[in-house]
Amino acid sequence: MRRIDLLKSTPFRLAIIFATLFIMSFVVAGFITFQLLKRELADHLDQTIQDTYAILTASYGEGDASELSETVTSHVLSSSGLGRVFLLSSKDGQRLAGNIETADVPSGWSTVEGARLGLANDEPYRVYSGQVDKQPLVVGMSFRENEEFLRIVFISFAWASVMVLVLAAAGGVFLASRVQKRLETVASTMRKVGSGKLDVRIPLVGNGDDIDRLSDQVNQALGRVSSLVEGMRQVSTDIAHDLKTPLNRLSLTISQAIDKAGQGSSIVADLKRAQDESHHINATFDALLRIAQIEAGSRRSRFSEVDLRECLETILEVYADVADDRKQQLQLSLEPDVAFVMTGDRELLIQLFANLIENSIRHSPEGAKIWINATHSDATINVSVADNGPGIPVEERSKVFQRLYRLDKSRTTPGTGLGLSLVKAILDLHHAGIELEDNAPGLRVKLSFPVVSPYNRPDLAATTARAKPSFMSNPPAENTGQ
Image 1 (spheres, rainbow, N blue to C red):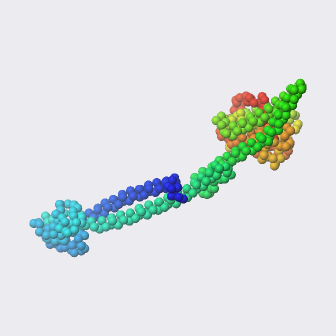
Image 2 (image 1 turned 90 degrees about the vertical axis):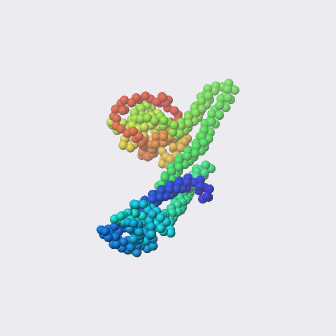
Image 3 (image 1 turned 90 degrees about the horizontal axis):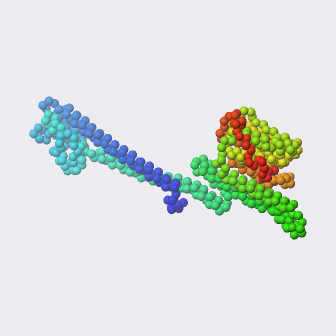
């Protein structure tokens, strides 16, 4: 990674920020520890001086200073150099014992330089001055040992700070490089997608971290975009292929009408055929636009609580007579005392069931039976539409959801081949699933709807209005799919 890229890297900047915060915390903690240690050493020095002074005063006998003088002399002899200083003076100021000649210090505790103790150095000393039977006694100790110990501690802490800084910076660069490499992989994938390679995906590390989860979500989005783009390409091809024939027929019919008009013949029949062809073309485009609108998700703003029991009973009421006219039986089976309540778009759900029922009625022979069955669980509502008609071959079932796709045996029947595409779009909008199964004979379509607002209200079906949707009075031509 180039240096300029590393400096612009957000992970590297975050690593440096956290490393800086860590170093600052380390320095602050070290400073506080150093000050506490310095105070503790000072207290220990005072305590040592106080204990030494107490030992010396304890050796004084009433009216006899000789033993005190000998004790001071023994302490002087046991001290190396001038790390500890002692001075015992008589009442008239004459030196009796000690290793210094004078002590220009006040009574009590004081910190003085060596010069005030008659020494040639300027080292600081901590001294305590008192009197034993009016005889001045001075006991002191040099700060040299404390300062040497603190110097060692400070140097050790400084080196530790340098090591922590180096390790934090190196660790930040290492971690930032790894993260930046993964982000660069994501950026490289998106650049390829931008250049039109919609089949590329972001490789996953497999550790389940946030970048992996984000990459997986991006891959899912790319898969969806790829499917939509491929669907648009396929739609464009299908429109050009499937609408070419009706447009040619429309052009031919109009040409024939023009010729007949020139000959003075009646052109009413030709105009009627031209009108039918134009209606078929308009129905195809209306269905395509409706599917595109549903796939865009704009209808989710209209979602509300919908009872599928009421929707299915409305479908049964509308299509029972249509089935009777074709000498077919349409039956509805629902679990009693259960409200099949979910969140969705009631109009689209009725459109979905209408498409499925119309397919079964249109493509099943006389005497066929059509069953609608619904069951309810805590998580899903399962609805199946089955018939004992010709069904759909297994190899064709994965294709019938494609726009404008029609089975060869269905091309002679009215329709646009968009019915099941519309069904699939509505199901995707509601996050529902669909399966096509063999009903032996016939076809069974199994739908599974997630229950967003599950509850049991037996009275809901009785109180819900059964107003027919506006399109039921004249079912649109696009409600076909097989």
